[in-house]
Amino acid sequence: MRIGVTVFPGSNCDRDALHAIELMGAEPVELWHADADLKGSDAVIVPGGFSYGDYLRPGAIARFAAVMGPLEEFAIVGGPVIGVCNGFQVLCEAHLLPGALLQNTHMRFACDRVRVRVETTETPWTSGCELGEELTLPIAHNEGNYFADPETLARLEDEDRVVLRYLENPNGSMNDIAGLCNEGRNVVGVMPHPERVSDPVLGSDEGMRILQSVLAEARV
Amino acid sequence: MKVRVLVRPKEGILDPQGEAVRGALPALGFGGVETVHVGRLIEMELENTDDVDAMCRRLLANPTVEEYEWEVVS
Image 1 (cartoon, rainbow over the protein chains, first blue to last red):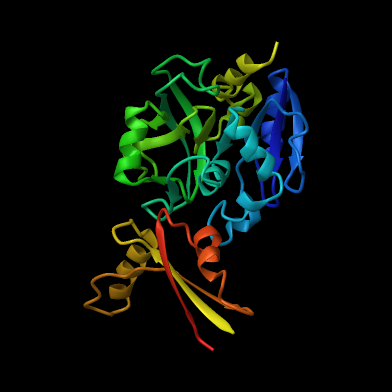
Image 2: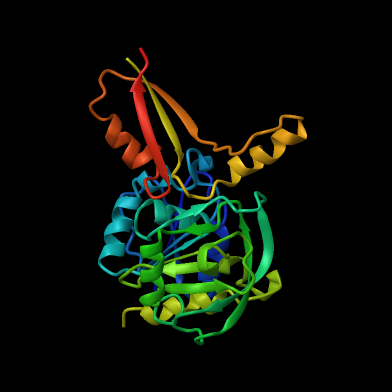
C-alpha cells in the first residue's frame, strides 16, 4: 500500500508521518505541494506544522497549493485522507470537512498529552480501534478550538461523525471534539498527533491504533 | 485603485484575541471598555474591483467564522 504525505512550506510533521508509514510496512510517498498528482497513493496524510507560516489563517493558503486539486478529487471519490493538526485546518479551509478551528479559548499554545475516546470505528482511520477505546495522544496547537454552527454540529452528532472526543477539553472545542469525518466518512481530521506516538522509541506507539487502521483499505 | 478590506469575527463567534485585549486595557488604567473585537485590515492596489468579493469569500475571509466589508479608498 502506498501512503502519500503532503509537504507544504512550513509542514513539520511530514517526516514523522513518513517514518510511521514505514513502520506500518506500507510505502511512504512524499507529495510536494507543487505536485500535480498523488503519485499513485492509496491513502493520504496531510501532516501538521505551520504551512505557509499560518499567514492569514492556518491552512488558508495551503488549500490552494497545486497538490490540493488532485487531493480534493481523491477525497471526493472516497480515497482515505487524514489531516492532522495543521492538516485538519487545511481540510476545513478546503471545505473537505465542515466548520473551522479557532484560536484556543485560553489564548495559549496547547502542548500536552491528552486522553481521547474513539467515538466511531466507521472510518478508514479508526476501523482498527475498539469503539470507546481511550488513547493518550500528544497535542501541539494554537488553533484547535473546533467551531461549527449549531445545525452542522447537530448533524455531526446525529450522523456519528465525531471520530475522537477529548476526555478533558484542552482548547474550548465545541462538544469536546478532537476529530471528525466528512459525510462520506473517508476524510478525517484530528487535532492530536498519532504520528508522534508511532514508535516505542518515542515513548508510545498508541498513535498506530489510528494510522494502521488504514491498512485494511489496501487493494487486494 | 486602492481597496481596503476589513475582516472580523462574526457576531457571536468567540474572539479570544479581542477578549485578551479587553482584559489588558484596564491593566493599563483604561477603564470602561466593555467589548473588544480584533479583526484584520487588508489593503490592495488593483486595476478594478470586479473580483474583490470573490477574493474575500475564497481567501481573505473564512465565511464560516468571519464577515467582511470592503471599500475603495482612492
